[in-house]
Length: 120
Image (cartoon, rainbow, N blue to C red; front, side, top):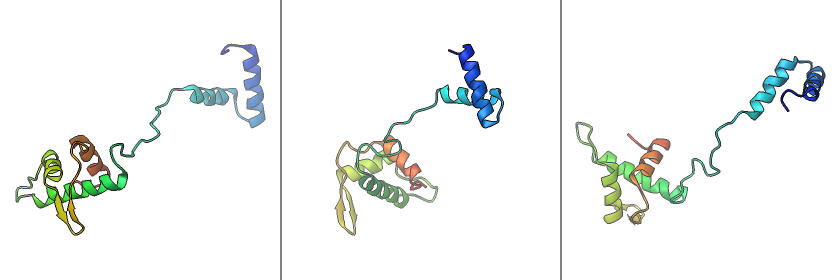
């Protein structure tokens, strides 16, 4: 318990052992019991596709957006680039690359374009 005399003697013993004040021990104990944010085990990893596949699709979408940029700096929207990639595909050196329908979403692609520095 917090106000227990046993606790006070144990804190004093620990403080004596480490050569610090009891206040320092109490502060350290408070840090242990404070709530902290917990992240998912797969935080930062794509859930919809494997990283390599998603990275490939994001590179193609970034290239589409870059190729459609006009003199005023306007370019194809991410949503439209995804539609083109799903419906028609993109011809690359390795052949036609077409994304499966419904897998890529605008928010996911925009998130990873920014995270992997593929956005303009």
